[in-house]
Each structure stands twice: as C-alpha cells, then as structure tokens.
Length: 545
Image 1 (cartoon, one colour):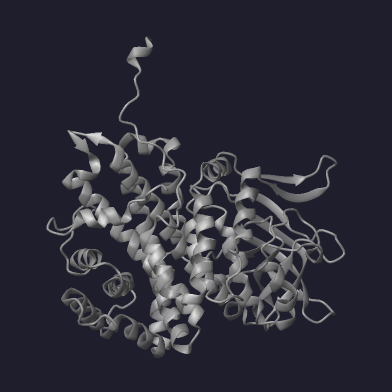
Image 2 (cartoon, rainbow, N blue to C red):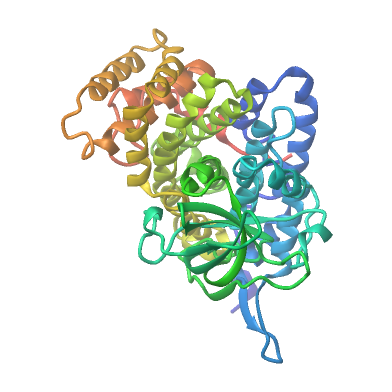
C-alpha cells in the first residue's frame, strides 16, 4: 500500500505526562477542605509527586505490564520441595514499592492520615487497580491487631513502614511487611459463621494449629494473614505468618490461583492449612467482632477504589472527546455527548467527595464520627461500587470502537469495575448491614441524619428527598425486601447533601435535579438540557501540564 494512503489524522493523543492529583479538581478541593492549613502544603507536595508519577508514561507502562503478565504459582521447586510461592512481573513490584514508599499503608499514626492516604490511594490506583488489594489489607489490619497490644507493638511498625521488601523471610528481618486476609470458605462464602477451619490450642498461651481451607485468600505472597477459624470457644481471629520465627515456612499450601474476570495483576488463591501455626487475636468466640474494623477499613477502600476507577474512566472519556472530531466539530462540543460526559462527571465527583468525607470522619475519631461511619460506610460501599460498572461501560462507549480495543486501557477499567462491589460483601450484604445498624444502633442513624441535615434548606429537591427517606425509614413493612431501595436513597441523599455544601452550584444543581429531583432517565446522558453542562464537563477535564 502506498504511504500516501496511510495518513493518520483525527486520532487522540494519549493522556500521559500529567499530574493525576492536580488535574482532579473535586479531589484537590476535598483535600483542602479536610486538612488543617499547617498540613496542607506537605500533603500537596506528597500527592503532587504521586500524581505526576501516576500520570507518567513509565508508570502507565508498568500498569499495562502487570496486567499483561499476571502472577504465576510455583507450588514446588526443581527438587520437589513444596514452596508455595507466587511470582510477579517486575512491574508489579515497582508499582507496589512506589505505593508503600508513598505511605499508602500508613494512615493510623500520622495527622490527617486517613484523608492523605485516601487521596493518595485514589490517585495511585488509577495507574493500576490490582495492586491496591495488598495495600488495602495491610492498612486495614492495624485496627484489628490493636485489640492485642503485644501483637500491635510487634507488627504495626512493619505494616505502616514505607519500605517495601519482597520475598518471604522471617518478619523480624524485614523493615516492612504486607498483610492479607482469609475469611471465606467453599461452603459459606460471606456467611463466615459457617466456617469449618479448626483451631486447636497449643500449650503456649495464644498459640494454635489450624486445619482447613480458604476459598478466597488474596495476595498470598504477603508476610502474614488475618484469618477466621473455629476455636473451642467459637469463631476466632488469628494471625498466621507465612514464615515462622525460626525461618521455616509455615504450612500454607496454595492449591491454585483464581482465574478472574479482572484484577488480573493481583493473585487471589485457594489455600489449605494442615497443622498451620497461628496466634490468636482477641478472645475466642469474638472473631467477627475482632476483624470487623479491618472489614470496615477495606470497605472504605472499595469506595475509594471505585471512585478512582470512575475518575480515570471519566478523564479518559473527556480527554478523548476534547480532541476527537466528528460531524463537523469536536465531540465535547456536541450537545448530546456533552450531556453524557457531564452525567459521568457528576457520578465521579459525588463518589470522590463521599470517599474523602468518610476518610475525614476516620481522622476526626469522635464518637459521633464513629457512629456516622458505622452506617455511612456500608451505605457508600453499596452505592458507589454499584455505579462503577455502568459508568466504566458508558465511558468506554465515548471512545467508540477505539475504547473496545485493549490498547486504550478502557477494557481493563471495565473488567476491574465489578470487583469492589463483590469484595468485602456484595450489595445484599451491605444493604443488610445497614438494616442491622438501623435496628441496633439508633445513634448511628442520628449521626447520619445530622450529617445530611447540615444542607437542609439549601435545595428544595434535597429537602424533598430527605423527607421521602425519613418516610421510608419509618415504614418497617417488608423492610428486608426494600433494603436496596432504602440504602440507594440514603446514599443519594448523603451525596446530595455533600455536593450542596461543597461543590460548585452547577454541579450541585445538576445532581439534585437528576438524582434527587427525578429529572433523569435510566441511562447516562439524560440530564435536563437546561443545566450548565459545559461547566460541569470543563471542571472534570484533565489538563496535562
């Protein structure tokens, strides 16, 4: 074919070489809102470094490589010895090392640590979502271990370290470690109280041998795991190290790695315990109560991780439409495409604002904040993670056929999108958890209502939605079957109240009109045409500096 027939035109330049943090106005404003002035400059520097790295060609290539070359299981060495190791592409280690070095496993011991970490997690996981799993579990293990001061003193400095050391060695020989968790089993899934893994006490206080299996054990290359097993006193939480203090390998037989829809860079496994040594965490019979704070923290990361996926999908869609021309002009100026992009941008900003508000409640740490989190975390986890998959699919469609091609990166976002809705309890589990809190902890509902009430009177559609929500809450008839509808309404009211208080008027107006006022269709791109859609799109547009 003659070269003159192969002129490349009207193709979009890659979104690369930009600051992922600075280009996200919803996120930068949330950080400014929730951090004290004396912390802001340092946080901006940290997040700017992370944002520029995440937007670089190098890190984007690492993300592609980590997914193109997924982990491989090596059960035995060349001589037939059982080793149960997982090998990762070097790109995985580079991503994980940068994340640990940036403090993404350290939120509990520094000022405003949760907001700073949540913002960093939202920025960095846009480069690659799979390695967020070990980061999340390592971060979330801290509150569970604090139920045992001795264990916390031993492990917490390594969990919150900014040093990433790959490879299995005795934890005492490592400056930093990673943690995983093993709760679900073949017969029970989310119903962990039906677990059959047995824990038999040894002579030494707090030491046990475990026998059983775990159907999902993520990040099996980690240095330690929090697992649930049936002790003589009932379901109990245990700390299970991969390497014992004497340097020998603990019994941790990886049967296979899961072949997953997405999250390809991360290893999820099935493991067997057969006389596996572990230390008890908390009292016997109180395993769920001990590990529940870890679950809550990872659920918040599900919200933040989904917000990250949404933001990256929206950024790619708006970037594409800014440069791609069709039917006599660039796509971003076409009224119907502008409606789609604005609708996606609204969903993304609402998710980001909610995620950072929850992180700020962790930092505040008052009893009212803790009560608010008990109901707001499962509410947010239910709704934000549910919205991620349709948003990713619509954003992919904005790129047309180019978005359906792997090189665009959009298929990877779409495959990753359902994960956070499933991990740490699917939608039904979250909705039922909200009902449980409503029934048992009236102070949590009070804290929730106080939060949304801060915006009362600012928008009549929000006021009407709050009134309708209260009517739903007062009606107990068929409450379990209505749980999803109720939790969806609660999430939208919470997001609306936050946007009315903090977002620009055009964003809050569009959200209230569509999500709360009912002037909206069943698909993205059905906002009222009279809204200031151009300003919403421009606000969300990523600008490469």
